[in-house]
Image (tube, rainbow, N blue to C red; front, top):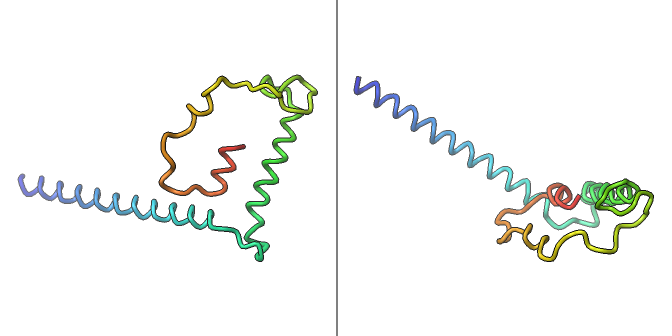
Length: 116
């Protein structure tokens, strides 16, 4: 019986260690991809600019679509500009910011998702 428990415990620990190693490998790959996506753009290479430029264009298009949308946070219907007066209370945006800078980089896609 004792050998069975030892074997089971050893198998569990082995599986746990394998899972931890797999998780570390996935985290390493994700970090490497994020670092790759945030490297400075080579303006001499049109392909390097294509995806970030397309994402920025999409952000601008959504901004202009929101100008026409009936939304209580965007002003009156048919109004083609955002409200001049702030719709947030003092300190509200500050309270939404993280208390520390991120330790890992974010991809451009994540950044555009945050601001869009």
